[in-house]
Image (cartoon, rainbow, N blue to C red; front, side, top):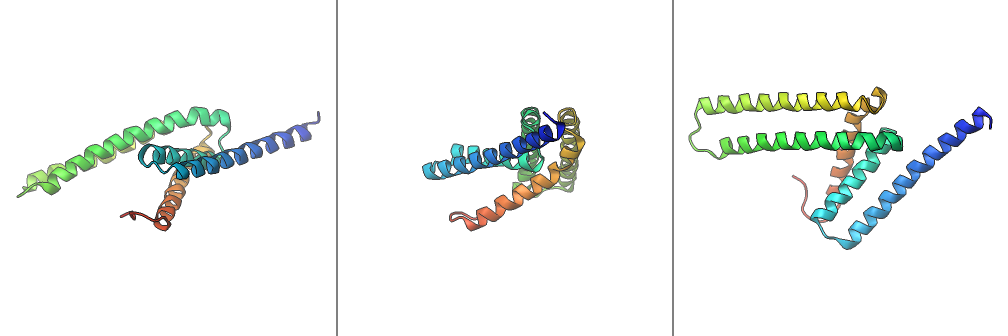
Length: 165
């Protein structure tokens, strides 16, 4: 088979794979809305949408996606844990009465340490991700995250029910 035809066939298969992923996402979204059990189903729906969106935005091949997602999810878990620790400390200071300057100073130092820890986690996992996807695709991750959250926020504003703060 001529190389030109092979290349076009590969591009066609890649495009078809992405279309199939988007169709699957739409189907899963419809099924989740039909059942309307909130917590676990909504979380799974959100994860499915995120995977489909990022896979398409980063143009990940199926092989790249299989290696990328465990790293991305592990990074997200560590970052959420770190953010949770900081929120807990911030809440303690906020809820305390007659807080001294020394306590505020320590809270600021804790916040800065948290920021450093978050950057260290991101650096560690970006280095790992560079081992499984090209830098050109990893470069798009920040924009994809921003775009996904912006679209999610817009959708939440349109849906009935409690509004995001």
